[in-house]
Image (cartoon, rainbow, N blue to C red; front, side, top):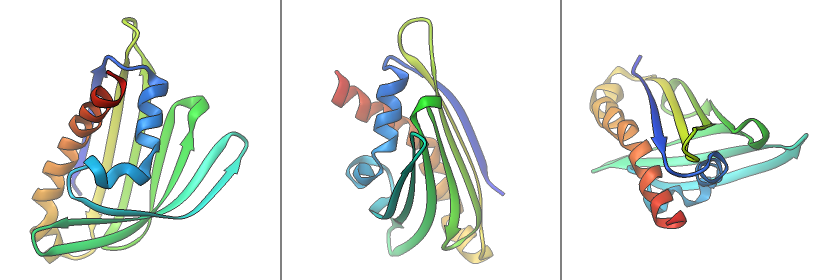
Length: 148
């Protein structure tokens, strides 16, 4: 049951960081291990957007695709990702963007997951752990490039 959580201050506004993380179609351009991302459906309701997305991750010869439900709640500066289908037993991912006093924000990133297969977990587990630790770096680097 690998789990990772970080609270990271960045010099960008909560709305800028929310928009950057919510732009899931662009993940293959900059996110470690993300080979492809396809939006299956998009529904808007009460100011929130609900996506169903397929993400393909890869490392060397291993490729896995999984499906998630992504709830984008801009009013609360929150993104919640729930697992639907793929190689995991479960996956829970949350992003929060809190204003900081200096005009930037604090990114709160949490992920908890477990692979269905012990073999796949052994093969990809440490690599996924490293990748999730690099996610906030990748998003901050992307923000610096876009919002500089």
